[in-house]
Length: 428
Image 1 (cartoon, rainbow, N blue to C red):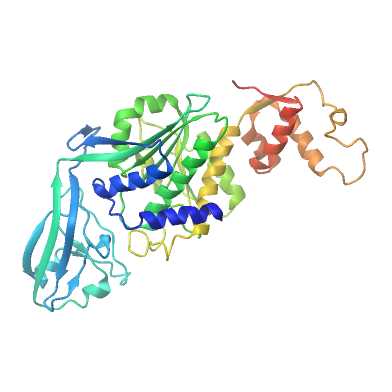
Image 2 (image 1 turned 135 degrees about the vertical axis):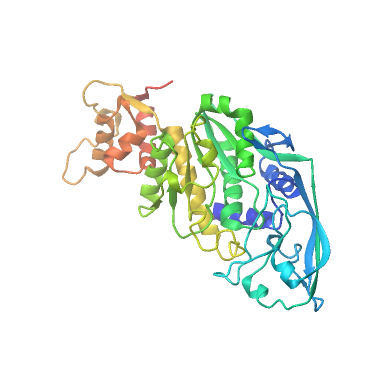
């Protein structure tokens, strides 16, 4: 739980920032991440840049926004909760009737105490999000509306971290940084990936290189791919979209479009052992940046290991998705370790060849009892079964599946057999 508590503290630190597709909230989030990851590079793409079939939007700045009721009460104050303002609202100042105001208010009648999260990125409008409970209390009269925002030609920012390994083959990790004040659907991915990246930077003798990005969802992944997809298609051999890894209700798996990549196999193996009741979604349940990474013509081997999947828990895209109600240190800890186990297995998933013909004599190496006695064969059988499958063609993952054990239960055995020169890796 120690790592979960540290991740949670970082989430609390990032909570107040107003993240969107662009703007100061994104830049400040990247700045806070870079304090944990000094090698993170923040990059900028100008508004209006053509990226595949899309265009980088204008930058959005919010100074303040609120409504003054006929009774003089300030409501929907952006400074109290940044979910109150419709994302990418254009400027507006004026006095309007309640009937006119209602055309610009968004509620969730089925969740009367929740403030919805709503955006209008690609259609110019202004609006406010309010709980149905507060909406029902509004009285006829004149309302003063202040939406002090600005849309202008600026930049879209994202963070990139490249961690070199022995091989130029890459493992890709991505999360998004564009949602204001939401815990599982935003901060869990940012914070868990930050701490996973710290661990990867410290990992000794990394087999693979790592390409890690912190991007605005959809437009960010499209922008990043438009710049890098040829190199990514050439080098990336596995990867994960890191999102919704912060609650403690369940584990979930969303496959790649292909469904049979090494990322898929690793994810299912890990989840089968840490939570056999994990929810197995299909490609048709997609909804995050895997849509871009696995799109036809891109075809990267990207999957998602999650806790409660986006869109599948009641607090999703509302003010109820917070650090008290949904995300907790235990949930973050579980999300972190599930993905870390997947990365560790990718690093260790080699094909091993036994170095002797026939069954090796283990006793002379002091790794096998010289006296045979009933019921002394538990770990011995596992060791000998493992050796019997080291034919230079079968991966560690496949051996673990054949032996019906978690792959990580074999790591010490592999290290011991390698130390005694009984197996060698059959891969360069």
